[in-house]
View 1 (cartoon, rainbow, N blue to C red):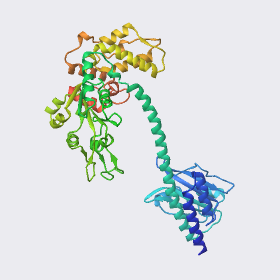
View 2: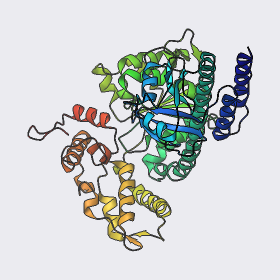
View 3: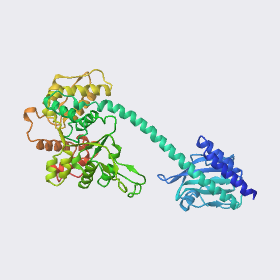
View 4: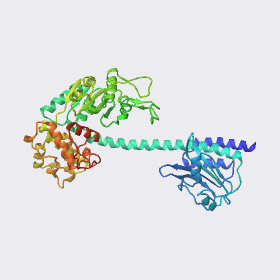
Length: 508
């Protein structure tokens, strides 16, 4: 009777200890003191399983033995070990006499330490095992069944405590990571969210800005069109910043980059258990943008099924999470953007006509850089100053020849290409005068030689880049990275433009 009372008192003390100790080391020492009040031991330890290496690492060790072999952070492989057996069978294993029975690989080390008996118990959380509790003593013989029952209860308490500690540690790591990422993003925004593409005095660009200023203060849906690299996202951000929603979220969705099977989940969210892998509720982008602006980039690449559900949300202002039982109201302004011909996509059946008319309320065309050549010098100087600061260079200036090359170039990649060229030139500059080498530019086509057929020019540009990368699309040196495009978007453009890899070249 007294043994049972001691066990329950010790178990209550362990429970209190789990909620009162400031760190894991003091927590472990306090637990082992309570265990010793119920049964004698000379060695107590916890191992945690690491599936990536299929091994166990000692998370904590307390021992009074002078010859200490297996210390904290020691690693034991799963195969052939007692802890591995306990992990696989989710059951206690006892070796009552290590002088007669050394079944597992770590038993030899325990015998070297002078231990006579070893008890290994699983640290289980429901059906999941995270490691083992290991109690060794000089005393030999079978342990008291009441002591084993007590140790099982203690092991369960310890398992949940460690699981909570690990969860809090992960949350803390994520908090610090998010803080670092936030600092990084703030610095990036100082450079990139400075409306570099909003620099310009040309008539065509002033007209575009006037349209943005007119529609900005409203909640009207906007469709921004223009070639790749013209600054459609910056235009969308400018419209958002001109609106009463400026202090609310601006959420960007790249429709071309969404995995086909997860489009609905990303846009509209899902409930826990809605599908395999949905282990928790997740709000969609519409919910995240509630009260603010949702920017749907490359909307022409959205799958037809998702287009139908998007249309419903735009009309009803209600979002249905996957697996949800009731619709959720959302207040979101939608700005869409595309570099493709949506009218042609409607004709081809790739884009819903009703969705097209729903987003084509206030269209804004961002002109290509070749149609605003008087802005090239302004933009070049703007980017030169930005990269001068970012790369910590002294005062820089573009040479007369460099400026001439910039103003006569066709700029198939538009403002983004200009920005990349300036960055490369600043990195390679050996003096305060920055030169633009001919190889920096994909083609030396002059203004007078620009083809009026923009589709042909785009095709030629993509083929040139593909040839320069030996038709490699993916990777940091691939064509998609060179063109600053998503690989799936590049493949889509290649298909539309009739660009295909020569048969003799291997697929990469």
